[in-house]
Length: 146
Image (tube, rainbow, N blue to C red; front, side, top):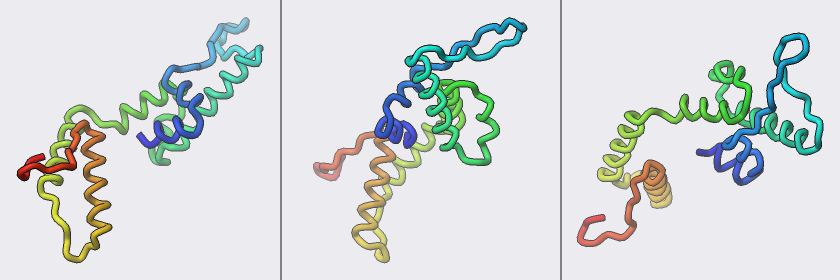
């Protein structure tokens, strides 16, 4: 989610490459080996540059201990899908996390040792996490119900 937000804010063209794909074409060379077709037009050169920049940006965001698992992926779109699959969690883990967050919300309490600003920040973070998981919390209470 952070990577998506960062790229859409800083360089939307890169995000478009990641989502839609813009990998260079592969062709058979005369010697029978496959390799990328060298870009010829300015548009092809820009597409190649964006593809390489997008892939590099994604690789820079991966924790070092996981980098080797993703390094061999050839294009940004496939790399993004692999990152989402590895770090996004499956349906069961997302459901469990949503349940835990709902329980934390229902049992939320301010600590005496915690200042009002820290309590508010902690509460806002909890609400944001719930909204990410599709659970919208009404900020207005009516007879103790949300």
